Amino acid sequence: MRTRWRTLLGAVVAALLTATTLVACSADEADGFVTREGRQLVVDGSPFRFVGVNLYDAAASDRYSCRPASRIPADDLEEQFRWLREDAGVTVVRFWAYQTYTDSGRDFSAVDRVVEAARRAGVRLLPVLEDGPGDCSTGEPGTSLAQADGGRYYSEGYRRPYGDARSSLRDYARAIATHYRDEPTILGWMLVNEAETSERDSRGRSVLVSFAGDLSAVVHAADPNHLVTLGTQGNGAPGGSGADFREVYNQQGLDFVEVHDWARYGSDTEALPGADGTTLPDPGSAECTSTSAPVACSFAIAREIGKPLVVGEAGITATDAAGRQRRADLLQAKVSAALTAGAAGYLLWHYSSTGTDGYDLVRSTGDPAFGVLHRAAAGL
Image (cartoon, rainbow, N blue to C red; front, side, top):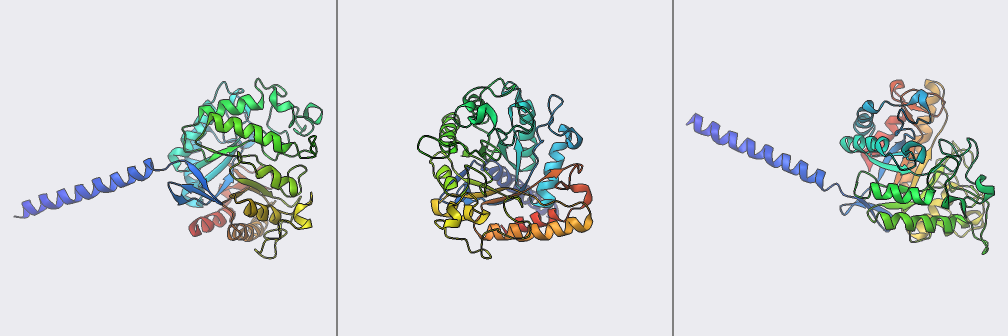
């Protein structure tokens, strides 16, 4: 009788384990593409909100690294992603996927490794295709895209190779979007890091309007599965702030809005610069239509046009333990305020294996900023 009951119990346990395994597999397989419904990001019909970090040199390889001193070896990347996911609550990592990392789209192996490591760790990715300030890219170091091609990069120059690139940004965007069109690990495509320019078109609009409209159409045609955004600071940057910000992002081809929160155009000590607590300003006010519109105006404009908003960068310098705690306290207020005000995601600057400047968040220091992310993730 005991043997019979043991056999029955074993069968039940086996069935339960099998069912658990099937549930896990089904959940994994159902981990679909991130889409948009109004002001929300959505996955498989459920709202998707996130916190995460920038790791811009994630695709570094022996062929190219923007910052070799803090490069994470390719065989360590999955472990780093797992730690970020499990210990810091990170679900999205933003990184550079410029032509320098891929030999102008002829070799995607470095980005492939990032995608594979992220997929295994359960982290999504937000790749950026070009750099507005001109760092880590194919042009002359220190020369921004706004200065390139005689100041006409965003109206003309992006249609031809820039610097030592082999492809135009237009052709490169098509190539990388085609390569990864079936990869749900990628949240979406960010066309430029901090696009900004003073150039206007014949109608008096920022040329970022036509640039983003054209390039987003190219990407969506090659890849109908992923979201697309331009990539802007938003808060005070020429061509992409205030009324320009609204006109740029109020285009069908741009699926979500991006803004950065840096003291240069705002404040380290204000939770949401330009807001009254978490009460947003009037998007049609003189403040919010000006070229120096604060961060909160970008939130208000995103709400008005009905699109999700992501804070793609927020960084505060810290050089010692006391400074890191101060930074964590300030970032806690910023993350909480942004999420309360409706942000779909918030990404801190910048995760690194070794600190090379005061903005790095280094795991080995026990930086309390990771606790900020963990607590925010737990509340989403």
